[in-house]
Image (tube, rainbow, N blue to C red):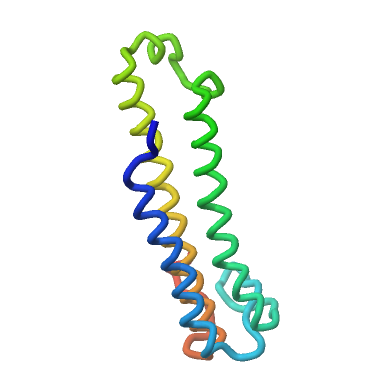
Length: 140
């Protein structure tokens, strides 16, 4: 089974997170916020290079589910499905539609995660460059 076409959007989004980080990196000061309190205020600092943690983490958040999904779709017996008997009673094309939908949902969740990482990158940049004093409500 081929993964959902939505994965193309995920790959474009992941590339976008890396490009966005590269564009923001040049304007960062030597020290950037590392940790924020519940009120969004900075509680810890890191060197500038730590900014690359965000795109690395975003990559892991996307790649891990993709590869787990890929493995599960290769060996359908390894899938933990509710109502397995109902799934197995479906004709082959019906099973493919169910798995395609599952792949689409995982891709959609990955896109949401990428958007959250991009928002966090932007807000960390805003705080680091002194444009705002703390994370905005959008991150929380």
